[in-house]
Amino acid sequence: MIASHPPYGEDCRFPPRTIALIGKYQSREIVESLSLLAKNFQDRGLEVLVEEATAGLSDAGDDPRLWTRCGYAEIGARADVAIVLGGDGTMLNAARHLARHRVPLVGVNQGRLGFMTDVARMDMLICVDDLLAGRFTAEHRMLLSGEIVRNDRVVASNLALNEVVVDKGAIGRLIDFDLYVDNEFLYNLRSDGVIVSTPTGSTAYSLSANGPILHPQVNGIALVPLCPHSLTNRPVLVGDRNTIEIRIVRADDSRAHFDGQVTFDMKSGDAMRIRRSEDSVRFLHPPGYSYFAMLREKLHWSRQPTTR
Image (cartoon, rainbow, N blue to C red; front, side):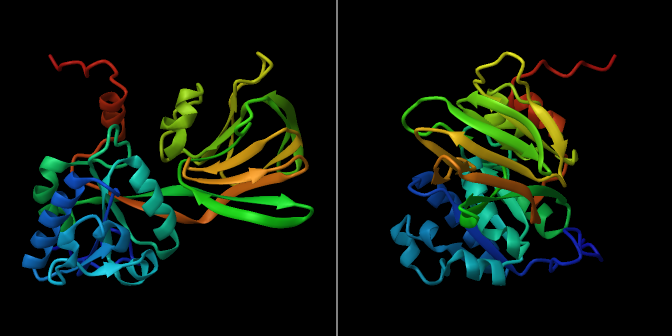
């Protein structure tokens, strides 16, 4: 039975009539899954859009009945829901492109961990019924907006769903930087760099650097030093409305990374300014989704105790 109200948010069309499919590049298994989903949706009378680079994976992409190729801008303008097939990296890329268009995202896990892609490939066709019936639940995730300032001019900017990282670059020597929160000096640090992480990114690079795990409902940003040259430097959690500024004091080579996918070179004297973006990402989760159950599974924590 179709829900009588928009279950994914007031600004989303429901039931969805146009579905976008986005897949990890250069994966034959993704092509098979895309073909199955495209046929399933088209058999239901829905319009199917396939992201243009994804469609180029296979000769099947030349079949106009099966594939309507679109860039991210057109997907953002036309799609009611986007289904992302792959791992977390594929989801990160799609999320940054589609955030400003407010297109809800569903993740089908065909990667390794899949913290953000929570539909198993074997269940994806079953989940289509739940998706179209409005039984998926929506969850908003915050994004970070970062900009590099050089000589009082913004020379680069981007978004990040997981984290913004400023690090030592290719040379491998420690960098020296000052860190400010809302223009108040926090500390000077010599280290390999610093991770500025969202709650979503707290289970990614930040976790490997001993950062805290933040529940997605926590309105905070984690500042996690990378191999600091002082034992007293520890992760710090600040509010999601604070502005973080990383000023490079001395560095032979330093770089800024957005979600580990977009990179910019930085110089001594440059500043990275980071704040919460006005845009957010909307994930759609299947029935029965649990964040804590996901953590137990992905991080191989102890089994849930049995009920006596």
